[in-house]
View 1 (cartoon, rainbow, N blue to C red):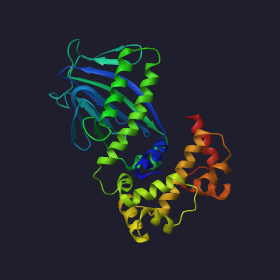
View 2 (tube, rainbow, N blue to C red):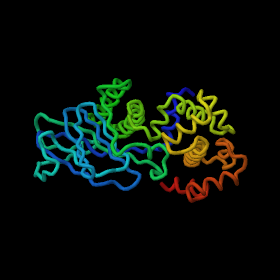
View 3 (cartoon, helix red, strand yellow):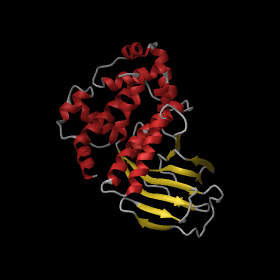
View 4 (tube, rainbow, N blue to C red):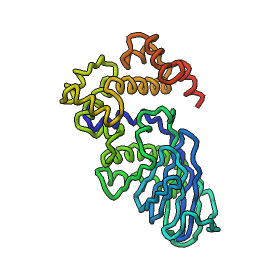
Length: 313
């Protein structure tokens, strides 16, 4: 596995379930407040045409969004979407009406030209409070389709999502949801490539030496890695590798490996009915009992209980 593939290896650990809620078509004056989501749900907005503003009341931050921008709120923060010339505290009335086009609910306050068109929804992250990747993301992830290596692909995905939902054909909602799931992975990847933060998992993946070590762990999570071997793969000394991991992710390399193994195991438990002993061996545990102890210590439940819980959801 190459270093750029490390994020692709981590992406399945997000366990994303997208839910497209509505398409918005608004004129000049509008505001749409969104309450904080319950844990595990992250709202997102895709600007398919025009421009608008997202305001975060808790931090007081306002972010202007334009065609092709995607914003994801990993922690489910309360926010207000509004027009460029509308105050976030404006209460209306804005004359917003809703109709079902056969694929999705459409909200609009104009029969003429629009100033902003959005696809809005939310993503469900399984075990959000303990997720290795999700915990590293900031309050708001904003990616523009106008820049970056993935710009063209993001624009195409957005266009496909819009086309499916506007058409209202049979199966459109399911197809658009799958496209939105792919779009999320690209948004996280694009954020990684442009992130400026120095103390997160994203910074760890973006670091030349640490990124190589993480890629090696993902390629062979069951290998009995030593610090010497990881340092060799990373083209680094042991001390330097430990410093990078602690600075970027506040965790030592081998402790990170344990976290990663257990996250991979949890995904395998949720996605199959395979024997626990097989899954334990695949992530580096010599016995089912050792795996069960480590799993319960980390998540508070035994592996079998975690599997049953995932089926209930």
